[in-house]
Length: 577
Image (tube, rainbow, N blue to C red; front, side, top):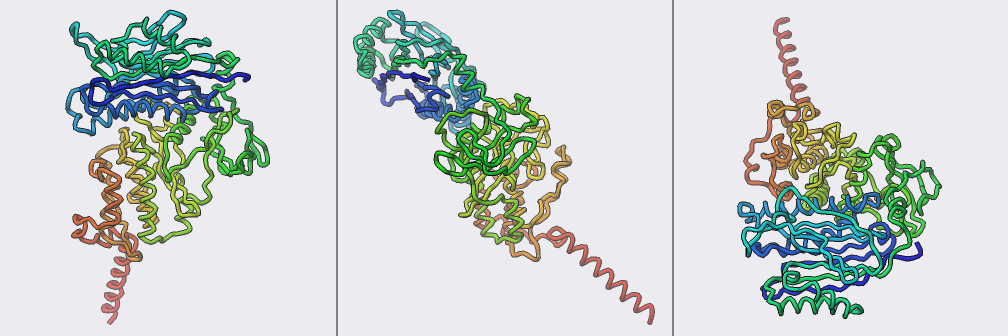
């Protein structure tokens, strides 16, 4: 590509006559290869004036879009990437309202904002819009409004929003695409500005200040204030200075429709990586250890399964996994590699963790101390909370999906089953099996066909804690067989306590609660479970130690058998005498 996409930008925002500014705006111009792969993002949000928390919603909407869009896969189209991000953002905002004091109040009292965004990629502009912020297109002396106002008029002076981010669980986003030309100007504006500024004034000002678009933005805001605007005022002016010398079709073909990798082997050079060896192969994916030729760092390369390459739905979930990883930034979650060059094939590159899975660790450490188990559980919980904070569920937490490195740091890996709130579930070949996770660690509610919650991930973590302490599962293999509420009520928890292990009884009660078959009877928060593992809960201290039959059924029946044998021998002796 001999020329890069290049733009000039001017921005200005003012609280006007209001005490605070509920608008928020932003723009991100990445370096290559993201400039070609993902494009340039411009976003504007306007919080509703009736809500005290709408400034938080505006900032979260803009920063979330600018951050999360660039986390999406290069193989996704602009439309799909932006829509997935906005669905997730809408769900997060709506969840904040449900969890706050605004839960039972009107829709205009929560984490709600209007939103307009544009992605400039190659020679096309992609527009995404909900609410009454506006995007205009200026060509020559013509100013055209590109977005529709999602408002319902009640009277001449009063109207209300019919659509906005965070307003409802469902989100309907307007989107369309238009070709770019050098010299195109786009204007983003909130209602506090466009309702008090004439189109001609904006056109004249932008032309007069063509070398200083920031000054043009400031002058237009000042004009709106002079004309009596009583709202916050924000404007963004974007002018296309240079376009890449490629057609949209060529760019889409090269950057979005990525081909599948060839069969990888040791010593092969692949997309800037030297393949060292194959680590793992399954029906879902192939995993390789490789070395980055630029940085010399060891990395993990994950490619789609050969057997499922003709399944588009499976590939969608494979790409969702990359997006999930890039959205998370936590020391206890696997970190993807940063883009330093263009991808030529469909794959995911992540950090290499020099260590072992928790499964192998448990084999090497069959009887770990309680404190060691606490430390591992606490680190896993910190990773899980990073998922839950973004309204995501891991859904496949198990020892094989947890790594412990040489420093003792615990990290969650594999996000193929992760559910993102607000994003429709993808009907993949894996999903058609009904249960995305591994049966022994999957929460009982999934076997009833119910949706998961953070308490479902807690159940999996509780099972892992139980297994580390005992080498067993709390309900054996019965959970997967219990596919009715009646059957689940009959599940019997087997105490983690063992006469050969020094485990406090209150620890047993803590785990019992975390893995209760009924999610409503588990802890409300992961933090409560983790706290009770370390601090004796007064409710559990007075609990009677479980009988031997519950603690160790094998030892119980052995004892009973020996007792009966002793009686038989004694009776036989008495008979003989």
